[in-house]
Image (cartoon, rainbow, N blue to C red; front, top):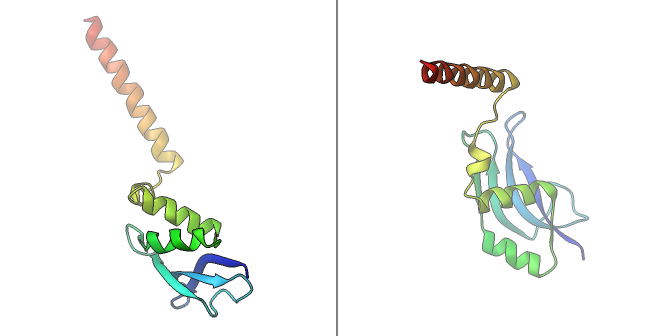
Length: 114
């Protein structure tokens, strides 16, 4: 029996909420599962990740495979959720910061010349 640790979607339309479940690979996404090992809510700020890492490790020892999404959640949980909580910056914001850094460097160079 192929067992996977994957996300099961719950919540209403446009308001997803996920449970991390251990399920037979042949069962439907939101269908029957063996055990619930965590929860994930992407709508909160920062994203809420609550996983039972001990249970996940036990299931992996038994041969369960993590899906890509759950592997990313486990990695984020192991890193203390710091990487998942940091907001990504837009290209405009990065360009603005680079320009400000250049201006500061130029101002420092002028000040040192005087």
